[in-house]
Image (cartoon, rainbow, N blue to C red; front, side, top):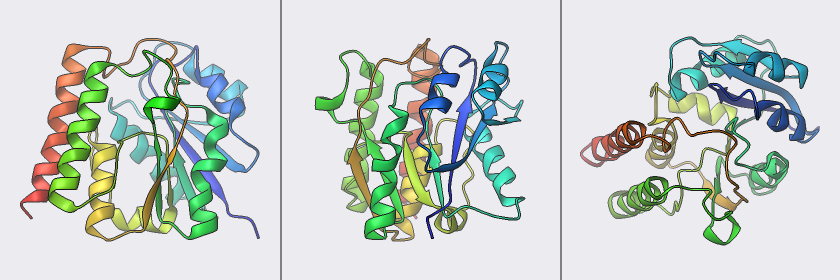
Amino acid sequence: MSAIIKVIIPAFNEGDSIGKVVSELPNSVAEIIVVNNNSNDDTVENAQKAGATVLTENRKGYGYACLKGLQYIEEQSKQPDIVVFIDGDYSDYPDDLDKVVAPILNRNMDLVIGARKKELREAGSMTFPQIFGNELATFLMRLFFGAKFTDLGPFRAIKYEKLKELQMQDKTYGWTVEMQLKALRKKLAYTEVPVRYKKRIGVSKVSGTVKGAIFAGIKILGWIFKYSIK
């Protein structure tokens, strides 16, 4: 029996890109859940046209949107084996999903991070704050926890039962690093797979602004130092 895979896509004003992301996800996905995070453009209409289930979370924050998607899944009678997270800005290649979930299906991994390797990134697809923040965060995780992560990439897959065990809490920019730190703490089996990465459609709400980049950096470092002193 094939694994049931569900995808959660947080989306704030991704009207120009969300339809592409939804329509290009592979047929191995059982349900695509777009969480409209207080958009004021045509994100909802375009996601629905592309065939996604659309939820609304008016509290702005990446983590809020992800938690809304998980609440929806928890209330379903038939729950998935694997949950995949991907951004709605079309910076990742949706058809790489099968490659991201493969280590779970074939090697019994619990968590897989789609790592945005330099050789697979389009020039200019990651800003300097993104690159610096990733390198600093993963260096600190190696230093404090012996981690092997090289990226905090948002394109990731995790066994649903393991995800529930993590009891995710972060409401904003710390969602990705919280998941990885808790996976380390619980000694989950994890790996990375290299994924392609391109310039996003539209302007980033995090790395595209000084305020967003600073706030994201504070949240990420806050989670790391919180876990380093436990």
